Image (cartoon, rainbow, N blue to C red; front, side, top):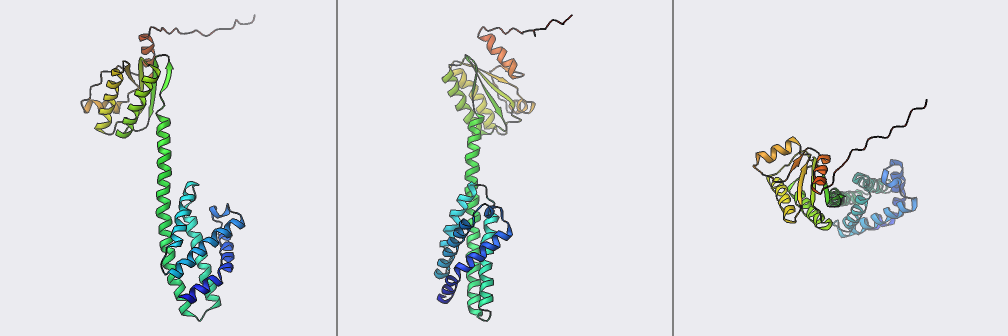
Length: 281
């Protein structure tokens, strides 16, 4: 084993250079974004970690390296296969180098192939698992940000706020909607709270339907009047099938709901006629 470690380390610089050349030739998208110096430094660290694992006899140091790489690369959108392919190209360079230098030393070459298989498999598995976890964390954070953006309650007029909703309305999101809407009603001292459901194709759970009903009740407890607008047929059917009774007014669209709220505030809208320009004689 020590002879293998010594041979691996003795040929490390040459094999780092050869690996870099092979990766450049493969035109892997991620690695093409690195300078020659960055690529060589990245490969050198990977080879050092592999040497430590060959000496240990078990994959460990390279696994930690793969984990670090996966976390960083996932945040920049790099395809995991680019990194796996780069790892395999580097290890193949070592295999070819050993075959050229020691063609008759089967023990040395077999020792390397066994170590390579163990390290490469564990490294690729760690890379893939960590990459997936990291990507899920990124996607989850992005989804939470989108939810926050989608829960913006807009003050349309003094005393009137509106919450436009888009997409599926699951139970968890319905709870977030309730909290955001109640906070906005209190903050703006709203008299009317319009919930625009025109962008909601369906209510997929009993809990979501019940939460929507409770949200209207909670708005009333704050002294405001909830108004549901733009209810789609599938949503109306879900609410009817589940026997949910909503005391809030329901109107066809947002414009109708706004007119209703403004009339309640004593504001009358007058339709402005377009000004016409006299025709030249």
